[in-house]
Amino acid sequence: MGTDNIVFLEVIEWFDESGKEIVHRIPESGSGEIKYGAQLIVRESQAAVFFYNGKACDAFGCGRHTLTTANIPILTKLLSMPWGFTSPLRAEVYLVNMKVFPDFKWGTRDPVAFKDSELGLVRLRAFGIFNVRVLQPVLFINSLVGTQGVYTTQEIADYLNRVVVSRFNDYMGENLDSLLNLPRQYDALSEGLAKRLQDDFTRFGLGLQQLYINSITPPTEVQKAIDDKSRLALFDDLNRLTQMKAAMAMEKAAASRGEAGAGLGMGMGMMMPAMFAESQKKGEPVPAPTIACPKCQQAIPREAKFCPQCGHHLLIFIQCAQCSKNLSPDAKFCSRCGSPVEQKSPAAKCTHCGAENLPNATYCNQCGERI
Image (tube, rainbow, N blue to C red):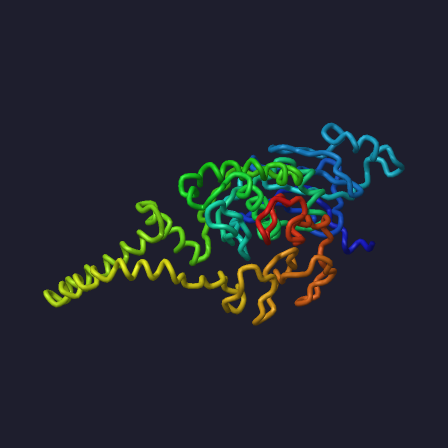
């Protein structure tokens, strides 16, 4: 390497002006020539990790540190080599932002399957926020950052979102029996899901500080069914609900038409027993449940795996990290942008419907059964 590329480092410090940098490498590319006795300044919200030959040699807390054999033991060995105390040391310093990074957003890009004890198979969308903090700088650098010069919140947000959504589906299946009981359990679900995610985060040296569930939204037809279910609680069965609706309609007609409407209401009242008896004999066929395709919005069968209109893949096995294109389980390159697909652990196969899910998933995203 020519001398034109050498950077002599005498004072090493970093200011995060954007507020979004988690790690900053000095120098951002290559190795810097760190002089013996250089000053390393680490602020209270930071930690510094000293790397030599690709390995972490030492870590520093806040304060001013003079890089000598007194505080970097490895220098004792390095400086005993032929060049002695006169040659600079080629190394890198990673400065890690240890503050809490708030307002990471998480949410389901596509609905996830949930088997409701009262409503059957329901596809849910959920959204919320969580806060993250680096707890183990060396582990975080080695597992996620690598040799990048700058590592920001944007680069880690998509990955953490996928982790939260996957564990959300498992936790809901294990701890919630029906959406009818959901409103009073938001706080408990948020707290339990955060505990469930701790192992996933600590694996990369991260700590999950808080997690909040802002909303869990079923499809429109399921929301209507929940509304009807709440009204039905006042009656013994659906026939009485139908009678109530019919009576309310006739009362409204009578009020709007005066005496003529009252006469009409009396006549309809005499006909109601026969009408209800006939409706019990001739049940109307119930249309098959449908959902809207996330891509073309056409109505399609709820159990469909592909949209018959546009071919959109409804069940997600893996998504392209660059453009979020839904990919097949064995894809090696993205069919939209051509980016290589990160190799992951084998997908979990459902023993009930045969669908493949995310690795280590507990509940199937297709049928909602325990895998």
